[in-house]
Length: 82
Image 1 (cartoon, rainbow, N blue to C red):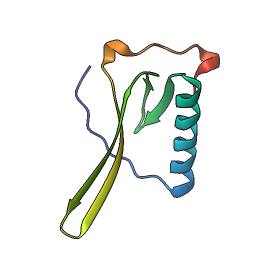
Image 2 (image 1 turned 90 degrees about the vertical axis):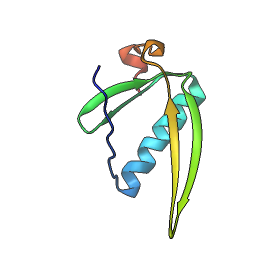
Image 3 (image 1 turned 120 degrees about the horizontal axis):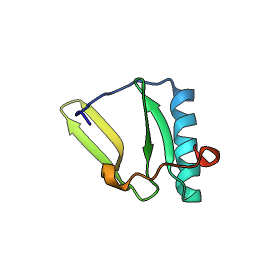
């Protein structure tokens, strides 16, 4: 699979909806299906989760990060896809 580095901006309601779906999937122990910039993929239920804070000059940034190896991805049943 080719390397990829994409950043996508969302409206507040869109971002809140994605976070809500992610939180529901994490709490229920299910994988999370998401599409970003035209590519759909699965975040496995055991992905590493971290929060990063950066400050550079007058700009601050918070990143919520989920990280996993492609070999760890379990394809969800269609009924369980979030």
